[in-house]
Image 1 (cartoon, helix red, strand yellow):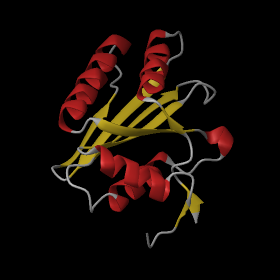
Image 2: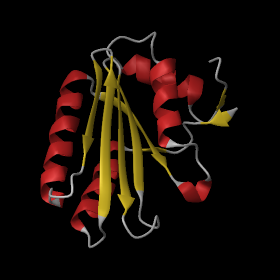
Image 3: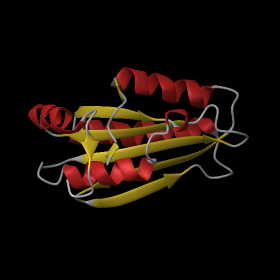
Image 4: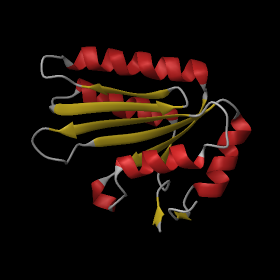
Length: 149
């Protein structure tokens, strides 16, 4: 059993981290994944895409997500803490929120092309209702979660 939702951060911190990563000198490969009842969509940072273009696409997707589900729980994932993989966190978030209407799970990975020292991996669990977000945080944040949950 792993603790999947152990490092919550504020939306403002998440946006600051994204801005700093995409405005800095580090080179990244980037991936964004959106999962909801409507399906799944992935966006990759293509080789010909500039950082500003990828940032604009991320910003638009996050704005659309905010319009649909504005109560967010954001988690940062890092290798140096031996956190579970982003995909595991995303899949668990999607599975655990099936009882809530209109949940959107967004994962963003900015992975350094040279090393992983400046990697940024975030999981946004977005709810239509604030009480669903509060319930999710009370039930799962900082707690071990089994595959049966």
